[in-house]
Image (cartoon, rainbow, N blue to C red; front, side, top):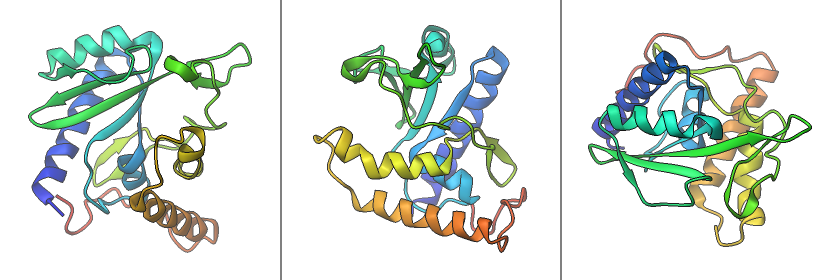
Length: 192
């Protein structure tokens, strides 16, 4: 694992969260970083940083990121996801909305209005060392990783997703059995 890259990504996460909180923009980590914040340690290499954000916050989020030195990059439709790069580190902000029933939904693109799994944004914050971050619920993360190739057949199953699901399931079983407390707020040994 490239520990320097992981440290830079953690610094980027901290900076984005600090600015977003100051600007009143809620964000949630998703994907591999959400898993690692749930587990309390960096478990693997991360190609990018994935987030969820409310669609209504897309414009102020974009301005905030540019102010922080991030550069927008072309990607999926802008009403679905915003992609940025900063010092070679990629971040993707998938936009969500709510429907008339109050369910969190896909904000744009071909699946606009489709509900995400219930409980998506209802998890306790995760933590790596002293850095705390809102995260996607780990049970929903498992469902998303299992179902994405079904929901979108153009996205094949990936070995890292199966490994992430196994890690999350083990941690959830240990926590349910009461054998593992929530992550320690002190930096774990070996954490960049």
